[in-house]
Amino acid sequence: MVTRALKILHGSCRSSRNWRLRGERTAAIRALFFSTTTTNDEDQQRRPFNKDKRLSFVQPPNPTWDYGNGGDPSTKVEHQHLNEEEAEAVLRRRWNMDHTSSKEKYALLSAAISPRPLALVSTVSNTGAANLALFSYFSLVSHNPAMLSLSLGLPRETRENILSTRQFTVNVVDETFIEAAHSASIALPSYVDEWVLSGLSKESGKLVRPTLVKESPMGMECELYSFQDICLPNSSEIATTIVLGSIKYLHIRSDVLDDSEEMVDPVKFRAVGRLGGESYARLIEAFDLPHPSRKLEDDRYNGLLG
Ligand SMILES: Cc1cc2nc3c(=O)[nH]c(=O)nc-3n(C[C@H](O)[C@H](O)[C@H](O)COP(=O)(O)O)c2cc1C
Image 1 (tube, rainbow, N blue to C red):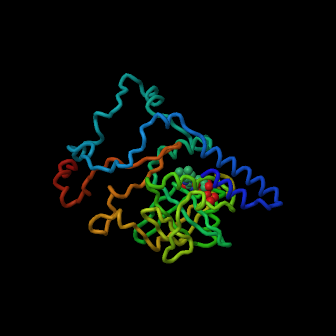
Image 2 (cartoon, rainbow, N blue to C red):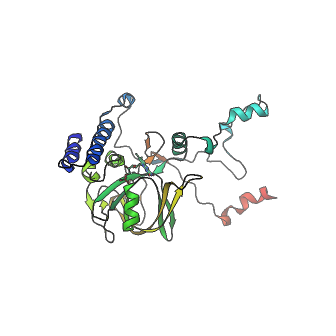
Image 3 (cartoon, helix red, strand yellow):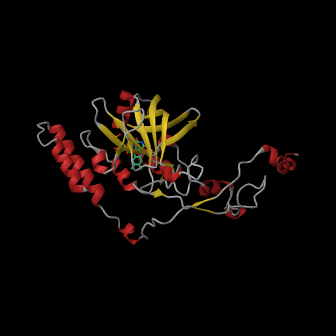
């Protein structure tokens, strides 16, 4: 795979007399080489990924919980021997975001606000060049209207393409192609085709020009609804752009639907979540908490409210 990628890079600017492009090519090769050939000793000692493992349903954590009970008492941290000042220092560490480095904020926030779904975003530039990139600052904003959000740091080709063409597709990443999707997170020059590098396949949509990812169990054709640039405090430098996308078409593979074919079956839909650092998560256990209905629950909590 590395050899193939290097060929792409070499071929794409072999004849270039542009030294900036040549420099970019060298940087790209370095990035590619280091990110795909380093082996992690810890990984070698871990159990192999069990492809047969599926999500199973268990009881909720506290099946006897009742209104007013609060959190699980067995998990309460007791620090009665500490005075208020000591407890303040021991029980939590605090970070003032104004005095925390970008690197530290990334490490803290991306690990704490997790797991996040992964969006493999396909776009096309004004000149027709296809681009594929992986994002985890991705969320469902609303189902009616159907809308999602992406948060794109700068510089991102994806941002430029979405702002200029107003079209993109978002493809949910599952266990079957996580490594290929991950390869679309290398910051490479625009002449590198992430589709070739990842080995993923294109599938035409119904409405927008950027293709869907065939391997993905769920793809969404989107149009730009609006965007908001966000600058660093006291600066006019754009740090991030939030993109709101109207979901125009939803494509879900039949084999991840339940018997009614109206719902995604969580056991069949094996989406991967992003944790912090270099970690990803899969869903192995789930539990149900019936949606509390005021009608049915009134009697249970009325006593509490006096
Ligand atoms: C798991 C993962 C999640 C990422 N999420 C984001 C994200 O939400 N926003 C972002 O700007 N970059 C994110 N990145 C970095 C982009 O994938 C990377 O910068 C990529 O090269 C962007 O490609 P583009 O310039 O073609 O748009 C993420 C990288 C990884 C590995």
